[in-house]
Length: 475
Image (cartoon, rainbow, N blue to C red; front, side, top):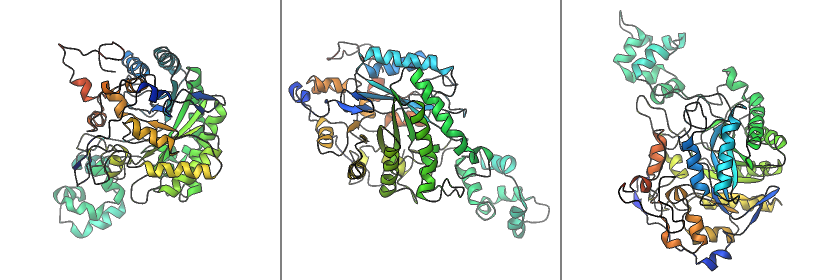
């Protein structure tokens, strides 16, 4: 994982836990309108990637146990992991691309409703992503995957010696690859093949604007049929819809090159989902800033957010970074991971940081988006995230009007009961996240995600939660 070169070790904020009476009158635990319904408070568990489904994306008992455990903490809103709407293989992540998925997903809705006593609004995040391949050796790429053209031959001719083939020369003198191969071919060789939304010579990519709105709409219908309170359209980070919004989207077919073009498909998807489940909650997850070269900046995000709000979104959930464009080169045999570069750090900053520190480092941009929406007369709630782990920190954010919900993934993973503990004045019993990104390292390896504080519980002495009386086992 990436760490800023300064490597300054920052202390956790606070803790400033409320008494029970303070919690009762706090904004954090006050209800708020959300779509055509309301949430019991402002606490929000965003989508996390647990890697617990089957290889074909089906619900397992492990998946049910995971969401049941977080539901016992009774957050006001919880979002189920990014769930695939298409047929691209995704490993042990949930899928919602066919009607047969409804039965398993309905079990998640059922266990969450029961475990939370009906207090938690349950949403599911809908995602589309493009194929990505593992990095192969340079020899394998050059001999098996590179499509040799006349242009390649022309560029290598001056370097060839008698009896030597072009690919033999490239293997003997790898530095010539910079001269002979295109920029895209070099990236594919050094990072692994990754399909992009700009690959319009590929019919599959070219037809995404035709296909995706209906795919998302049908997935949303399945979510409602499964008993979810609503859906979240994933248009953040490194995936398909975010890539259309990206400043890197140079498509010239009306779906790129400028703000209106880049917005066109994500907006069509949101409108299709809104129409497909009119009574359900429909939100969208987007970036306040991409944090990459030529990426979208705050002004772009304001423009997008305004159009999403006017198109009928019930909330806008904000994040930052997490892009492939600046990801670290993967080892041979592994695929690129979009959270290993500077933009990935902005998405999930750790306690090893620069002078700015990791806690709430991107909240100013998120607050500016909400301010822009209010100035346009749009009352849509916004969800802020990024290193939120302390009561005062979150309460001040809410009371200042910088956000309407506060999302916390890593702290909730460290202690799924922490919202309830705050609410009952038991803050001193909260197990705090260390923000060293142990969980992210597991995600990067596609291993089951957990918290190091769960992993390190002794088998012989199992602690008991002071709030619930339950033995502390992994969520």
